[in-house]
Amino acid sequence: MELSEKHIAFIENNLTLYGVKNKDLREDLLDHICTYIEHQNSDDFNALYQRALQKFGGYSSFQNLQLETNYQKFAKQIMTFNKLKFSAGFMVILLLVVSLVFQMMQWPYANAWLLGAIVIAVLVILPVHFYASYKKSIHKFS
Image (cartoon, rainbow, N blue to C red):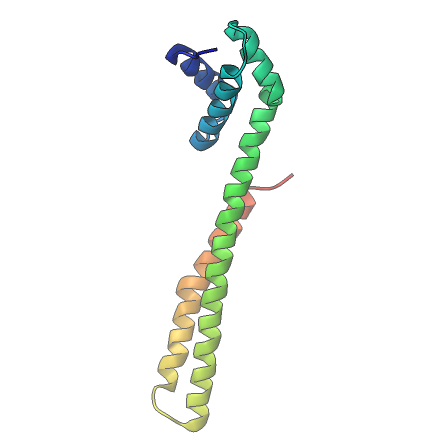
C-alpha cells in the first residue's frame, strides 16, 4: 500500500497523542509503522494501521518505550557527571600530592598547589556532585 502525507500525519499525530514525546523515538516508530504498512498487500489503511500497532505492542508499549528512552538519556547524563567527578577528583589528588612534596622539600609555591586543589574541589566536584544528586532525586526509578 502506498501511504499519502495525510496517512503519515495521522500516524504521527496518534503517536503524539499516545505519549511519545521524544522526537527521535517518534520518528523511528513512524518509520517502522509506515514501512510495515507499505509492505502489506491490502489497501485498507485502518486495518493495516491497527495490525501494525498490535505488531509493535500497542499504545502501552509506546509509553513504555518513551519511559525507557528517558531513563537511558538520564543514565547517560549521570555517567557523564561521574566521569567529570572522577577526572576532577584525580586532578585534586594529583595537586595535593604535588603540594605535599613541595611542602616536604620546602620549595616555593606549595601553598599555590594546595589552593589549586581546594579550588577544583569546591568549584567543580561539589557542584557536579550536588547537581547529580538533585537529578537522581527527581528521576527515582521504580
